Image 1 (tube, rainbow, N blue to C red):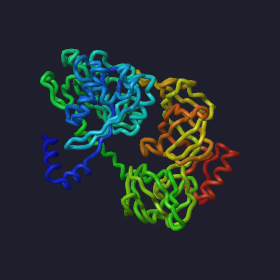
Image 2: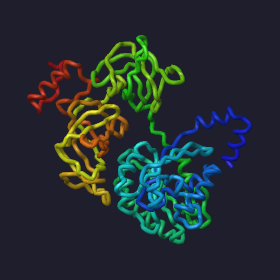
Image 3: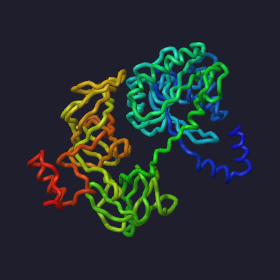
Length: 473
């Protein structure tokens, strides 16, 4: 009914329709879980039943289903997102596939992620920008190791809203008892995961039960359908209250009269006249103008692509970061981070890796693995290395001090990727748990440049010496 009203509005008052579409809220979510739990089929069913597939797409899908489908004579909706030849041949998802759709309530971007253990890196990539995770569980198999691994990674990446979709309920006769068993098992696993909300839905992606429309075959279920959960979830995170962070991606110098610093705002907001500091140099200035493709603005906020011009000519280049003078990150060469390892070659203590944090690229080495997490029990244990798909809390020492935040405070400047220096392959991802206090660390908001240099010199010769406050000498 809502889509019908929207269609009528589009035909009669296009200006009002476009305004409504532009100002809808956006939800980014991913589907994850173990292999063959039905993630791609669920997305296909969601798009189909919410009338988001064009007639020519549907016709092509019928043809593809006869050639590569796995559902017999019926249409295989999983082929909507499994587009690679290797995916269709094997009937699995390999790479992350993104799809967009919209309802009368809000807009959605879906990331369909693979369930195979060897493609965990692709799952982590898809989850890194999402607000909500749809965890698929096969009603016949229950909670598996990969279900737990994906749930834990999603939690590490800051996703606070989980919808646990217990799929293939048609294969267990829509048993309420089986639904409750899986629900109890999953809740037992997630007891140690903090700050998450969980909602459960029994469904059949193949037949459409409780995906968009409520099923008559689950009269015992009083909760919401999957689409109702997606439309109702509140993803407001107070992003405007976060400290301003602008990683500089490009210095725009089209002529002698203009010099701007371009990038996408990672957190917070900025206004003309605000004082900012460039890190790592520590030089300060005031925002002169905020330039965008659509013209100049008086203020800008998180996720907007902007170019800032400053009142002073200070040295800022790609890889630097412009931050609020009132709330600055710590400048340090030592980080404590949760590492998701994504390479067949284990993480090696003392080996040099390239580290990319926001727009800054540097090198570093891991000095200590404090613990490794067992994804089945979330128990921590001592480890000397991290193998493929293992997760651990590690200390990282960089060759230079970089501005960094706690991941929970600012995700973009609180996370990094790890790159093998020989192959140039991304081998891991890190979420900063704590910026450690080392000889190369300081908070420029608390110390003057002279104090920074003096403390660095003293700590070089006396590592256990505490920071010197010049005002108390």
